[in-house]
Image (cartoon, rainbow, N blue to C red; front, side, top):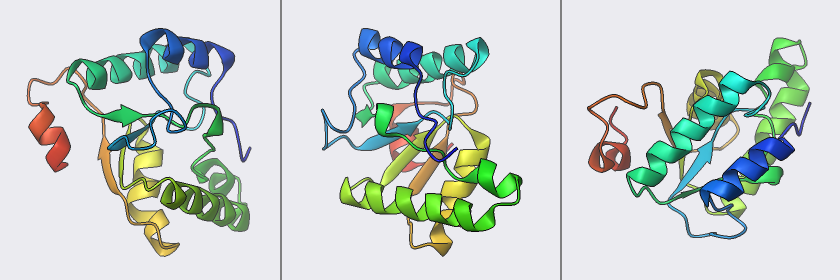
Length: 149
């Protein structure tokens, strides 16, 4: 549960699209976090590919964690493992602070909630944006960079 990460299909799609990981681009402005199991089923995979394409087309400077991505901790919490959820949160916060990640874009509402609210209890302070309507006309580089949706 702690580390579900990207499937082989997801990693291949990311590579085909030319999406870098933070290991390759440690100075990227945004982390795109596509959810805890981003390519578990076809609809999730397609949705996340659309989101990455959207960010790339708008020339947003972003990278992903790829195989280094862990779950946000929400699943453990939902199953009644609050302590494990907290440990996962703290692990992510520590890793992201080491990578100097300050801004996160996610396509998952549960991850958004956790990063925006729960992670603050553990010392995580990130600017978090939820990609809920990727084809919305209001989306522009300026609104994404300002964190206004």
